[in-house]
Image: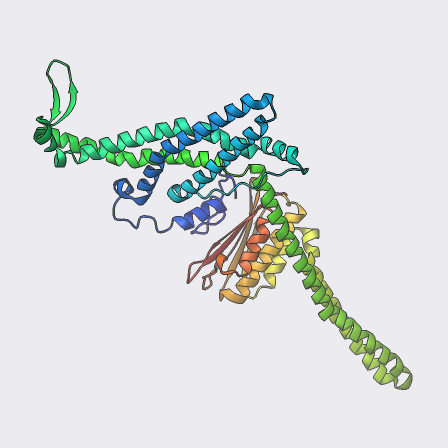
Length: 461
């Protein structure tokens, strides 16, 4: 989506244009916040998220120890055996074990941190054979990133476990101290919990009413602090898991490009089928009928000139209709006005054909590249068709502007609303088409309206 530095708005609830599509999407999802009666600082200590992340932090130590022990031992063994051929398989086995640990860590992060990290793909190799397989395994960056995770995670796991155990014990222990202080005089013959001892028989034990109040206050403060410390450590854990245990950025980008290419190919194939159908059922059928009519008119001109002239006149009308159909078909492929005059006049022409009054505002310092210009044109065209067919609106507006290196489009109407991207409608197909060029489509259409559909496209591909 758009970069965080953009200042102008894709779509706001007030109709302004301050921010980006990303910001607007966040704003839509954020609606409804504040439903809780208690402030987040007070409810955080008892929220399920805090306890899940606390359990994750406590498990970091045993998982870190296991991963560190395996990685150091197996890699050292493999490196020591490199003087023989056995060292290579041992190193590969070590990396395979790190991959297995990474698999378990991704599952743990998914269950407790609610972090869904995509599984890295299999290790590619160019040639067949055992040596090629060994070389591919040893040269794979994903394998070594898993090994690095196992090494880095041990000291971090030790730190998070110690901090979590200490802070949890002291916070809840001090908060509930008045409830269990009786243990000391009954079982230990002491007045209360010893805070410090100077070694000369003097010290401080929590046993007076003032000590009880102090204990509850300090414990309560630590209890309120605990969730935020745990969440901060969990954020670092999320970065470690997603950065070291997921697929590489290159592999992710290749997957995205393959998916986008499939969408583009399917869209192009569907457009070609539509053009073929329109030519076959429309202009081609009309031209075939026209050729037959002209043949009959040629024969009639010799027998009955008046009837022949009337048939030629009818054929002339058919020619005009066929030409109009061909113009409409050409406009559907790529309108001449878009090529000659740009996005503003082309969108004004589209708006003029809409069944509701449409206000078009185009504020562009220059023309985007033709591919993006064409996608923007057909995006607005399809959205205005939806306004005409489904919205029941009395008026609509189209706004086009530029934010840094992004082209922004917004189509709004005062109709009945209820448009949904996830309903499998034409909007979903439109979103896929925009995604093929790293574009974004955001729909804000509450029941009862109004509807605002905002698209964000790169200025150039």
